[in-house]
Image (tube, rainbow over all chains, first blue to last red; front, side, top):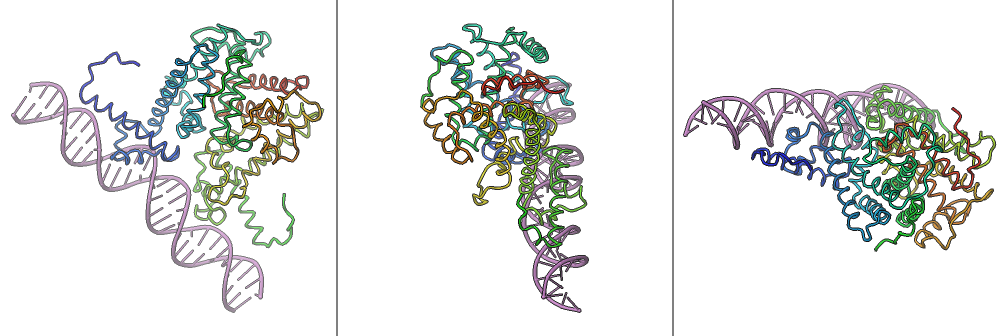
Length: 251
Length: 251
DNA sequence: ACCGTTCGCTAACACCGTTCACTGCTGACC
DNA sequence: GGTCAGCAGTGAACGGTGTTAGCGAACGGT
């Protein structure tokens, strides 16, 4: 991203940046091998032949390290989603959304530990803004925003390019309308508030479904959630008026 | 529940049962005061004037204690939902479902720590069946089943008493159909598989919405999720063909 | 009154996050 | 080229965690 002051990196600084990167990568392998609970500073340090206090030269605390890992994972996930989106053929937003949603679920199910760190209840405090940390946005939040933006942008494009039925603004609960208005104001493009409400509803279904599957809250009924997920994707296609673009998964 | 061998409780056994109850209650107050992470054995013991190892006379491990607390919380939540359901006037299943769903969200938002323990990602292993523990069902699972049963039963009654549009069995993905079939076989009453799929879809929306709100995954757009929740309730009412029974919340 | 079970304690182990004081090394400046 | 500041990394230590082992006291049934 921001690499404008490209050269004035002293040799020391480069080495330091490398170490930071190595720490985060090691943290991630520990996360994968040992699970969210096993992500201990000492474990990370051990795995890279260091001692735990040394990590404090690079991160303020375990929490700080975790936040940076979270941000990196968000970015990685978003990169995957964007790549899938940009490789979609045809590149219509409806089909792109289908593929992106599927890629999201795929990433979640194949990266169980990472997904738990990003979207589990332990992430609550990581996502939470503010704290005593000043109210400047921290890495996980901007990365999380970018992630959500992929979906929001696609739904927005579907609406603008093809349209789908949305509730009239006057039919929305005023309390909801005001919040949607405030949220909309923070977005790059203004959309009718009804579109925002439809997007939120779809987002809840998609996100809720994936979280429930990964965290085992669907196992009381299903042991393989993929068919149900595909059924939900078709239902979302109907809601967004792109049902005709549905294609069964490749495999 | 099962109090058939009512009397042969020796004095010692009664005292022991009392202690078990006191431990679980103390664990719950610690949970509320300190949060999920603060739920430490030593903290529980300290608060009731004991030492941590003493708790091992009553529970095999911290995990074991947590599981029992989870089961109790499930039962308590289910009691609340059943009470709300039984007090509904009129007692039509559609209206009852509306009130029960609202009560669920209310309990979740007013019992943040407890909800996190029950439905957060930390509950993953608690919910998970089997382990090396034999494959007998453990307390959290039976309690969780009872909890889900409240919703399932209401949706079933709505279908049987009034009906709502469901997909034809032949339109379901065979892979999904088989799983729904297997699940259905475990339920007390047999329902068309299309009903099961509609129920699952509704459950995902309801459950997903509440989890996302409580765990802060909706705060990027909303700071008070209630209006959106009500909108979702109305949408679910349409799906289940009981939209006419919607009433705005009492407040 | 005895004896076995139960209960709670202390001590200890291994692990965690975090702080502190101390060592080398390295880069920069005169 | 020599000196000196600053940085990376160390081991020790503090207070916390879950858990195990062994001991003593109290209790219940005979």
